[in-house]
Length: 261
Picture 1 (cartoon, rainbow, N blue to C red):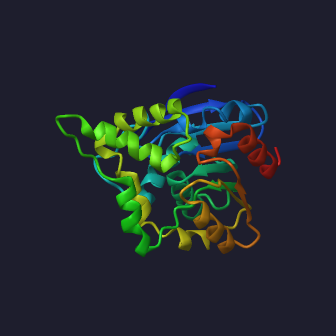
Picture 2: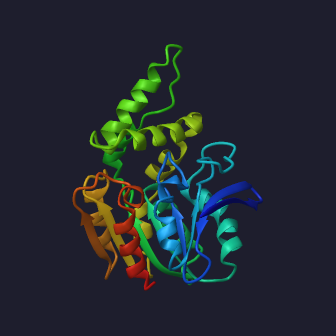
């Protein structure tokens, strides 16, 4: 696996990549982390395909937009990076949470004829009446002189990802969260305003919705899969979330089998 940057008209997009031949898979992560979420899966993908995981603009090491933007704009900003690796070609998507919203926009509005498969883990199909609860769960950047916000971040991450999550994983996620802290909520705001259900109705490629049983969007995923005719659905028991990171062998096997690699 190696890392690099793609220069785009809107700044640099950071990526991790593994594999040199076979089908191309673009991996898009959840917020507020980065392509780190796929670092354990990428080498497994790379044995059979060419896998590229991007940092969403404003997250990880990718340049941020000047202010909050919507999902359509996130997708537009990522198009040049996709073209860099697959100019005019065909590819699959493997995505988590925020990455799923961005992929939905890319697939349905820009890349419908070029997307061979989609594998979603966490479809943020948030109903208006659910937005307040999800917003409260995410929070907003608040820095205090005593540093109490750091302890609050730790407690919130353990609550959201499950208290059985190993502390090294929590620490890694918190470190990434802090690195983009003043804008960590931008992508969440974009997701809450995006009509994922409408986008799902436009999906024409084969779709596999697979998620961890303990993920916050697990039950929503079942509803999301039912919208797309022929979509496959699976919940993985005993995992709290972040399938590409916490269960990389299982996740890689399921994705590779689905796309025929």
